[in-house]
Image (cartoon, protein in one colour):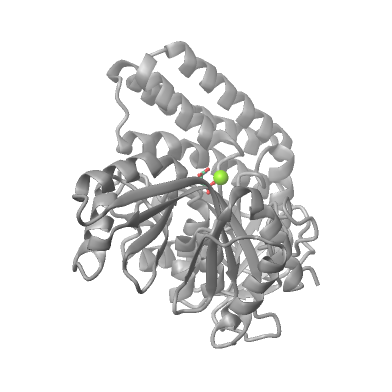
Length: 460
Ligand code: ASP
Ligand code: MG
């Protein structure tokens, strides 16, 4: 069971989490808890580290340290009743905060912040949280121990900021955690691990879900539960459609399609280990634990709803690369993509019609200028005649594995938008047929999502 930053935001919430864990333990389950940092702490650490690496202000370090101490002391006081456990916890926090302060002051003097030091600094969020969660469980009378990701056995490559577990991690985690599960709840820091040299690494922002999935796969869990502050994965963004509904069950493949398209509940890499070991993943609401949430499973149930969700991505831009010289010129696409890769541009959507005379791409809006400049300077005008762009666009995606082989879904999508006079600017559907994505102008985006949510009766 993994608890996100909002679930462990403060002492009261940590106590609630400890009570949940106790309940499931008492019901006869063997559990591993994975915790995020207390809400907002990772951001605070990263922001201060970045600032002081530029301005060297030790006063900012002191401020942050005071904030962090207060936040974690408050949490200890609210989450733990037992005096001995409290003092132990305070001692553990003091030691770690001391190290953190030294590291941050080091950054002030050095004036540089490497990826390795970013990982080291940001690891403190989870390293301060785990002893408190574990202490809170112990103060409810259940045996518990806290581990860093590395102590639990997760060893990664040295790709700081987005490290990947090495294969032998799975065996090691199994050996370290399994023997005590019948009497103890281990609490493992999410997000962080270490490399072979014992240097701290992180799995990327939001990486605690990934940690939980690695651990779940290692211990051969029956289910991996991700406790969040939402009811599960929803049919769309409830800010756009207030009667958006949690999806009771979806497949891994669909969940991946959704996460790519900004549903933000799950990062695709999170469920990779679960997929490999075919372990169901459940997304549940910490604050409404009786609600079943969303279960993500291997098999693709072809049920009546062919379409499961509609998503929207903002802050994107469209690039249209055109020229008669592109037709039949082998290697044009390769050059476009490697040029964009070299310019550090991530491509979100691709479409080229069979005329080959133009290619449309969607990129993050912040990459637009770099992307356009890079493509313009790569090609002579006799190949690419024009590189046009449009910032005022959004991507809408309709997702569902049940669309595979079912005629008429695309027809329904575009017909219903056509009836509302919504113009489609670009379309892409991969041959997996799990996702139909298209581009509309920004001012028609919300209307598009609402129309489709209604058309496919996703609120029912
Ligand atoms: N604390 C980390 C972050 O905020 C990891 C996580 O919360 O999953 O990115
Ligand atoms: Mg977080």
